[in-house]
Length: 502
Ligand code: ADP
Ligand code: GLC
Image (cartoon, rainbow, N blue to C red; front, side, top):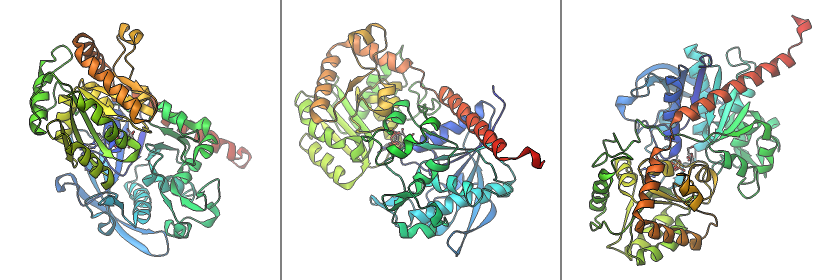
């Protein structure tokens, strides 16, 4: 092992404290994997009202955060990631965080998200300084922690504790940049001197993510393909040009999956455990999902599934358009999701036309998600963009063959069924390119044919289940990135310190 590092990871969500999507799985699994490799890693999260009391640990100190001339009071607590000896700092402020959902209510963003995540960012830095534990590197994730990277490089650039801190900033989704009207800038505590196109200004608005992209020592995203895509106008959402200015410092590290939680051989949420060599349990899991979804027990037709946030980015409208065609052939579909109210209605309405073949379950249900990956024959994911995607990886691990659009992490994790890939034992899924209902329909028809070919189907299930998708590889890549950030910071300081003065 390289020498042990002290790493502070900061995120807006982490399993099992609070989860809305894949970020939570990453913020739980990456610290665990780094800890197993001998690093001293600690995690910081907001202390949301919905975090179970048993996970909240003990209050350790108070916080006085003054960003815009008024002091906001808070506190910080210390707890542990369950089953792993990783300290977790929870930043408390009941006014900001005593809410059930971390970001929104009924699909609408809280109006004070800017204040909430600026308070969080600054509160983390004050809390960690109080512990006296100085990390070697600070790792921020997504727009919620972008202000933290900016504070380290402005307010705290000459702070005795934080001065010269190397930073890594991970973009899990460029679709959420933290954009606000420019007149809100004073509420962040940051100065107008930063409001220019090379920092916080974005088409006349305030863009918090831009600040982190400008200041972070190293930037990464969650797959190689997405790291490339976001530097192009088609995927850059207005930031492609700015990201290209940091091209040398921008990499992609594909996420992993945590096999202690996502393994059909041991998963306590599923009806029968199974493995690539003993697949019989998967049939029982299919029956169990058909029961849960109120669908008839049918072995002879494939069960398609989706488990997702219902947002445009995920191509839900394409599924709505394509479903009639494969349902007409007798297939079944189970859909678990929540999100955009319009997409919820569209999915439910389309599903209602096929009461004996489709079950749409609106809501968020973690155990049910496990049962669906286990019971499904195929998992549909026609994302318009997908930074990494964990659900297709869970599907691979559970032998549900993913049907994906070739983009971002989907392109990097699923290998298409072609004669050559099949012969080499590499084929794990069905991949299509255009973001259209026609292309998705063709892919689902390939799935229907594949379902008739038991030998190929089983070979593909096994190939997916046997793939090593563990965090060990990804966490080693993060360690290399942390070390790069540390070395780059040392070099920068060596260049700015005049030896003649010493
Ligand atoms: P994203 O982070 O963009 O939502 P990912 O594929 O990275 O996509 O991760 C999604 C995570 O959220 C997975 O762990 C998936 O199982 C879970 N998930 C999404 N929607 C639901 C739901 N409705 N119920 C339970 N789990 C869900
Ligand atoms: C984001 C992305 C998803 C990724 C997850 C974890 O939510 O949308 O693709 O897997 O972050 O990195």
